[in-house]
Amino acid sequence: MAHQKDETSSISDHSPPPAAKRNNYAFVCSTMASMASVLLGYDIGVMSGAAIFIQEDFRISDLEVEILVGIISLYSILGSVAAGRTSDWIGRRYTMGIAAAFFLVGAVLMGLATNYAFLMFGRFFAGVGTGFAGLIAPVYTAEISPAASRGCFTTFPEIFINVGILLGYVSNFAFSKFPTHLSWRFMLGVGLIPSVGLVIIVLVMPESPRWLVMKGRIPEAKRVLDKTSASILESQQRLLDIKNAAGIDDVNGVVPLSNPHKQGKSVWKELFIHPTPSVRHILIAALGLHFFQQASGSDSVVLYSPRIFEKAGITSSDHKLLATVAVGIVKAIFILVATFLLDRVGRRPLILTSVAGQTISLAILGFSLTIINNSDVKVKWAIVLCIATVLSNVAFFSIGLGPMSPVYTSEIFPLRLRALGVSVAVTLNRIVSGVVAMTFLSLYHALTIGGAFFLYAGIAAVGWLFFFVVFPETRGHNLEDIEGLFGNFSWRLKKNKNTAMEVELEG
Image (cartoon, rainbow, N blue to C red; front, side):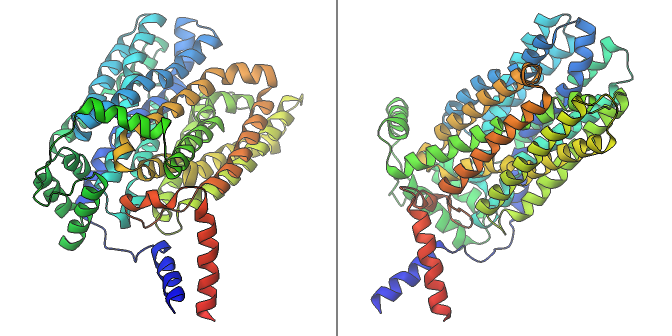
């Protein structure tokens, strides 16, 4: 009987709790924080079209276009690394303000650029700003959200990235009729509007309760948790879990603050030098997720979609930009689908479905582009297939691999390692994104454009195997409990054991 009781408890431990009522205050806070992601999305979307007019205006080569488009990902590394520090030092909230300030300066400088070098200088500020935004939005959203809604709420940064991409595409189309030397300036300069909006938002949003606890500001953390939880009982439990995770036992909240320098060194040591099996597993999962998200070519499709459509036989500038707007609409729609499914279906089924769909879409896209490239006449069915697979690729990306990077990464790291762990993962993301964006034109000249997408399909297939082996399900678990799901891949054995036990109990 004792043995059966233990196994039944184990089943309960791994089953998600019943759905709770959504907390509207937490919903509003998550929405406000995710506005930071509009900055990153707008830059990605607007450069896909602006680059065409910049190349014509400044008469730059394809190589210079690649550098202009992709360099922002490398610049953003500085922002993401700095954000890991500033978010622990001055808080998650004011780090968003820094993101907005950098991007605002970048938008003004790019809009006023008189030559390629000046434009690259503006790209530096915009890149650092997007680095700050890309890291802090998912961290804040995960920390402010109750467990029952965390999967939904932590997709908000990805939703707003897609909203930003769509706005960038619309901006391209709206200003494309302007004279060449003005069109791209308006496209880039309009980016200061979301920056100003984010500065205003930062002034009214609350600080992360987990950061407040780490700083010993327990009463303030309690007030935020009371507002963002479904009940006072849930708020008390969340506060207790956070305090335990932070190593705080003092019931009165009088917490002696540790030396930040020593604390930083110990965090680096725990994450990289002497990680526990669970922390090592978490780090592998986070880094693999961010690597495969970018290495499978998602940025190539988004950043160079006008060129892809041109290769597919669409020669009109208006038609290319309109087709690109369709890409943005599909991305925005399917990221909303992911928002509703993450807490219902779970993380693992969605990412496996997403990557499988991308692999097939990329392979068919490569096939259709190869047919078009090797034909002397227009092959209408191949053109239609090419457009359809571009759209299906971004759709599959948006239901899993896209939103999963902020959701999964921000929730799997323990509190003490979260800012640094997310910072390292986002840094890898930006490096791979920069490499992909800065090599796509050269890659399709070397391999043909069809060959480039066959390569991306192969990388996506390897990614599917990685996710199948490495990823445990985290749906429904409190942040402070998730670390226990990792380590030596024992989660798969537990899952099989629990499934067998459930069948036995039903029998």
